[in-house]
Image (tube, rainbow, N blue to C red; front, side, top):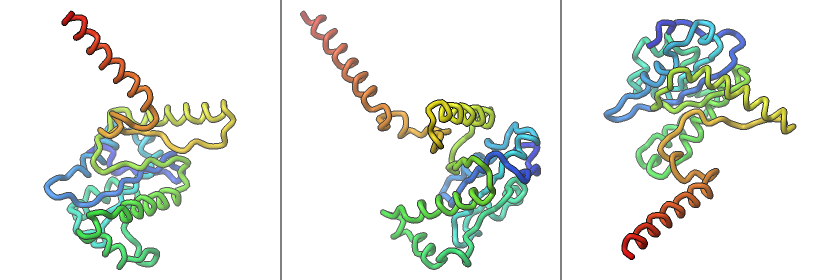
Length: 204
């Protein structure tokens, strides 16, 4: 974990970073994810981040990190379900193995719940991070530069807002994601045609 792990957010953070986490069988990524985000940040940079760590269990003690001191040292807010504002019994139903098989309701609910907590910090920008990623060194500086670039481009085209920046790539985004399907299709056809042409030429 970073040396400045006890530094917390200022009263006017630039960025709210929200991470929702659930206990995983046989694997623990959460602490490494948080550590990689905080590693190398100066106190000033850390003060610009409001870090919300959401233990997405109705019984928070089911997550091993909840019993570990580092969680409360590094987070600005350890978020739990508030029985006063959510239907806790319904969430318990969504935690059952049967509900998890085909259910997307709980992940969507958790995302919204965490997003609302970030909105309450009044930070102008929000970063929603999965609990199993590793942040690249310099991610914070690159994110700030990307935000500045997005703001500049929005002003140039006269649009009122921009929606999101993709900070991390997963394997699903290294292939046929919808934005670039035509480029991928054209390149694939070209490669196949080239190989077929070389094979025909070699045979003749």
